[in-house]
Image 1 (cartoon, rainbow, N blue to C red):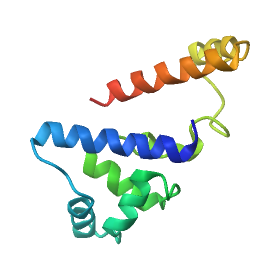
Image 2: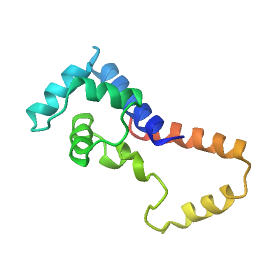
Image 3: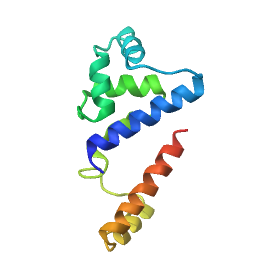
Length: 125
């Protein structure tokens, strides 16, 4: 999955969770106003572009603001470094998973990726 898809998907998940928890729609305008109240400079159009995947690399302070607004770790929204260039795998379970996954077909990797994304989304609920 590409970076733009991951960030857009994660933002969609967060908006949907907020709407479910609060029982009302959440607009890009409302989020922009809340973030601007916290000192961020962001437009509703830019948020819409992030949610649709048209923009994919927001500034770190905006990611932090969004993470605070949605009450999730910043790492959940920082999709630019999900694996490539990440810190060395210190957890033995992750190393085993990586080694075993490296032997799988492209189709199987897609399936594992989809399952991992579902599990990651469930973790933030």
